[in-house]
Length: 451
Image (tube, rainbow, N blue to C red; front, top):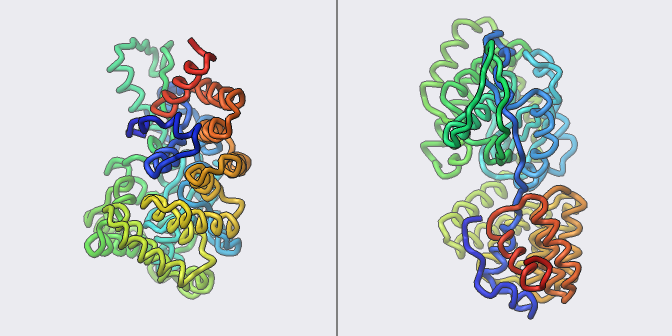
């Protein structure tokens, strides 16, 4: 995080006097450890066999999916609690990915609880589609276009190419010499790189997007869908961008969109893939399989509006939208979690924790409500309850060094300095950086564990 450590945090933790600012700072204190990435160099493109510069091997692409994707999916509040719908989306994906240039990648699919409009994939094919965008689609062909586009990024190895370009830039800045021979990389110094969701899912170039569109359209037609599904998907996104631009900011930051892409998709549909246009877009099958989700659309829309208001710091307005969402759908995990976050941001931990606990009960397998509940319990002078909640997060989503830090905070507040120091030391040893690491080091020095 960019915000500095709240002054006097250690003393307030020890005295169980955590403030609203402390709560917000602590909740954002999940810090990933640094990862070391090695520049892999040139490889043959799976699409046309031409040489491309990549920053990851195929093994690394798969490993990043395993290590990073679960944390990003959890940030988007996890897969929806509708096994049939997740299975349906997976069946559409499986129907297509077998026909791609890289059919052996470990593709996986889930509908995420996030309300914003987006879909994204990690380098090995771990894919997420938000409930916000799925509720806006009209038929299975549009869903196939959405998934096909993401498959295009995987098959063209766009993330691996961008990671290679990013590492090359770091090499140039650092002045590290690179020896090359016969179009392959020779010896080089490895570079510390944050290989996280923010890096892997940052903006694709327009050329990347055009190639993913073309590949996605090719894959969906091969799988028996009309190519017009891609045009219709683009039309939906262009209309939404004009009517509600704030709701598409996240998607367009990672997937630049414009009318030119839609026109190109339409031209391909009417020429190269004209024979596909008589194919059934499977609207009825799509509607049957998404019926339960579409019943939630008023709740999803209220959550969207609440999140937009929160981003503008209009907390009263946001709370009103989330209240409508919870009132419409009391069993909706995202609505309860977002209401808890909104109340926490207003310095109302006693009210917020009720919604956080409701969210934990509604979806105990998902990690984010446990983290929020733990942070709120610190504010409510319940460090033992906070530790238990953070431990539940850790069991469900291991590998987040930030939770080790938060456990240390809880132990410090409980007066268990020795165990707190052990957690702070592990947090630092994991390679953590930033303000939480600074706090951990300060306490270790103050307690005599470090010089």
